Amino acid sequence: MKNKPILTIVVPCYNEEAVLNETMLQLTKVMNHLVEDSLVSKNSKLLFVDDGSKDQTWNIIESACEKNSFVTGLKLAGNVGHQNALIAGLETANQYSDCVISIDADLQDDINVIETFVEKYWEGIDIVYGVRDSRETDTFFKRNTALFFYRFMERIGIKLIPNHADFRLMSKRALDELLKYKETNLFLRGLVPLVGFTSAKVYYDRKERLAGESKYPLKKMLAFAFDGMTSFSVAPIRFVTFLGFLAVIVSALVGGYAIVQELLGHTESGWTSLVISIWFVGGLQLMGIGIIGEYIGKIYREVKRRPRYAIEVDRFTSKVKEKLREPVFK
Image (cartoon, rainbow, N blue to C red; front, side, top):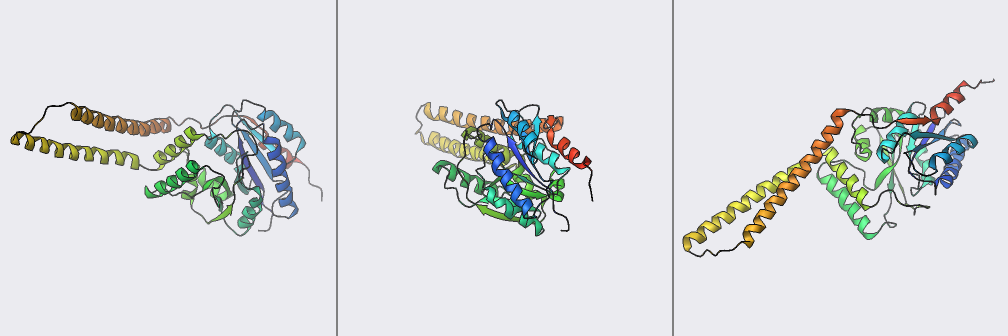
């Protein structure tokens, strides 16, 4: 590469006032180091995306925009969720960047490997995945459920990078291809591997959260996992179909047994088996209707083609354009 690439680090934020100042400080140090080592252009930026925060997150971002030449901000008109906020930052950054890195605001991902990401980019790698080397900081339950999730997704044909979240680098051409996927139900961990292009993995140890609370409690994690499954596979519907066939087979066997007992004169009156059968079949029906309804709901959201987000304030584009208008003296 003849010219130093312009790098943008995209950081989705939702109620992150407790960690934001420290996050900006640490990422600014990383960016300064990359510029000093001639790995990226001095026009590189940090783009903080405020996902409709209710605390002082946006005020902190705006204040930093005035004091820190690297810091820019994007304020969304409302809370649209982590994945939509992330894609908003990626789409905005892609206009003026040669490569983009995404990372969460809590800095549990190791920022020291960002330099390795950029070095991989210089080698011609289009997508660099940050992969957790271990899950020792997780609880026993979270560690084992995560392991089950990745194995299950692989079994139903969904291509994921195990122990990879949204800490990655993407070149401009890879990001251009990703942004062609216009679906409303976003699951970026599944979409990015579909893009193709050359990729590499960089392993790191995940840290404890600096401050504040996790934005992904158990309820949201389960919803996110189920959303990923139903966005990329019809396996859950096929599973319900299998259960339906199994119930029919079991019912036929039980019915045959009942007829034999009737012919032999060994029948006994009772309601327990009847009630259990009704509950079992009824439960299967309700589960099947629920899963099919989930898919119909996704179709409903997709066909409406509503915008995934609305931008209220764009300090990134204005700051970049202002920089481009500056006269160049030779």
